[in-house]
Amino acid sequence: MTSTPAAAAPDQRRQIRRAALATAGFAGALLVGSSPGWGYRHYRSLDEDSLIPHSDTARRWAEDAWRPGGTLVFHVHGGSDWSPHFGSAEDVGALVETAAGVWGRVATADLKMRVDGVVRAPGRGRDGLNLVVVGTEEPERNSATRWSVRNRANGRWEHVECDVTLGQERLERIADADVPNGLSTVIHEIGHCIGLAHAAVTPTVRWDRDWTDSSVWQKDPVMSYGRDIDNELTEDEVVGASLLRPAPGWLRTTGSLSGRVRHDGGPAAFVSVHLLRNSGGRARPGVQVFTDETGVFLAEGLAPGEYLLWIHPMLAQNAHDRLLEQADPLFDLNDSHEMQVFVVHAGQETRAGEFLLWRGRFVP
Amino acid sequence: MRRATGVLGALVALLGAACGGDGGGTAPSVTAPAPPELTVSFVRDALTVEEGKTADIEVRYRSGSLASPLSVTVFPVGQGASREDYELSATSFEIPAGQGVAGTAALALTALPDNQISEGQEMVLFRLAPPAGIRAQLGANLIVTIADGAGVACPGIRVQASPVAPLDGAPWLTTSLAISREPGAGRVQFDWEGPYLHDANCADDDCREWWETRSPVLELNVVEWRIESSPRGTHHSMDIEWHEAKTAQLRFRSPAGACASDQAVSCAYTGCILTE
Image 1 (cartoon, each protein chain N blue to C red):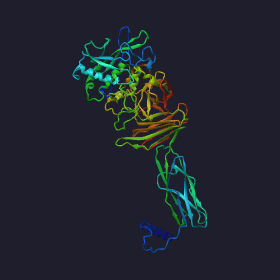
Image 2 (cartoon, helix red, strand yellow):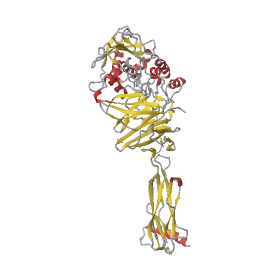
Image 3 (cartoon, each protein chain N blue to C red):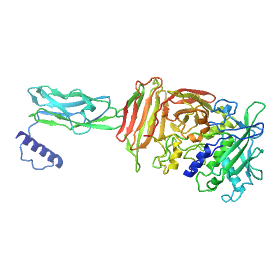
Image 4 (cartoon, rainbow over the protein chains, first blue to last red):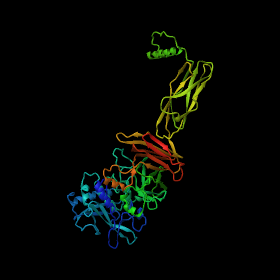
């Protein structure tokens, strides 16, 4: 269960911070497993040991709940009080469909979704409906609740249902068409429904408007707890979602890049590895992955080409609290990158070798 | 007396040139100047030398009648480069005795490297000085520009910066770092040592508390990062901006020991230097 603090006011931030510390276990029937938010980019299937699963060990949707090429259907909860910020539950449906459409436009992924009107279901729960409801118990937070079952055939946990809860106190901002990134929080929760966990934020400060616009670090991902988020997906989310539900033939066109990061005391667990794409001789934002517990990283779904690596410690710890419960990564490591360019080929894994991070990051 | 005549002659010559020479006017009623005993001038009036490189300073001379050899001094004047910035192979040269001797002399100027890697320029003006009492016609002074060269951070890794400049209307500095890697160079990482910053836009305690749950971020804007990759190596050019009160510092490190020492590029208001 997660929330999006993008451009939140201080009081909202406090609430969001509290919310981010909440855990994500739910009760279920015999075959319903919990679906905790592990590390970016995917949630793991619980039969895997690592907190940072690769795409082939990520938890995906059960085919009978969302078959390949099919459409994931949401309903708006008619029993929720959507006033005064929405005129009707149907208005909410239109907004959610707009947010889902942002994912649906990803050409490399199979992410068709729609909203099929309003239902008078009891509310959140394992009821076979993907509901959008108003959250009143914790009105300051939005969340996505995924329900999973174990597939008897392969033993893997699979998503079968996802409910999106929009906090009552967040509705005004979501409904306000004048808020430039008001839709981002709904896009974010739908991203969790698809199976994405939180992304990392970009590593340089983002707040100074006197600066020249950076062409390298343009904005933070919708799935992050960043400051500079709009209503569009970054390449990071496009690739992550495409790995979970790839469009036919897309995977064959991609390659991957792997490596290991350490510091002088051992493996650098849960550090961010950003891959910057060489686009016509200029570095452009690519994808980000975390290293696992042993400092190993694997970035998949990469378009063939040249990449640079920028590695830094986890910055927005409040977005990854579940990881921090399981390990004790270092936060005082310096940002580091290498001038060597790594070439990725379709269908191949490029091994980038080992990187070392140095401690010393401090604010005088 | 000879000097006074010489000055007057020069003045007349200047007037004549200003009036167009043979314009048909009345010849001035002054004594014609005595011909110089020595004419000496730099072959070029300006040259540029990159740090670490050597250039020849050539001097052309012609003497009237010299009973004994003459030593002509080349000496620096004016501001700019100091004696530590360059080295001259000699500070004088000799013109042999004789009648109507003409020739050239050459001195080697070596621009000495310093730790500045900003593409700054230092200038030094050289003047020729014959011995006292010699009636000489001197050419223009020589302007030598010493250009800061790239620094060698590690074997096969060269780094250079454009001049550090303020950003219009903001307390920020900007430069462009050019870093080249030859094909044989070992793996080298750039370790950003700062500046780092917690979010400085926080206006209240609650906001600060929020940001204290997050690590400080690099207070540096990478505006553009250009990459050229070829069999000849990799060339990076990174345009950066940072706060004018701070130092942006990037250390070159090699886990595999490719660098003998971990040198760092430090950029501040005064420029960028390569330092250990």
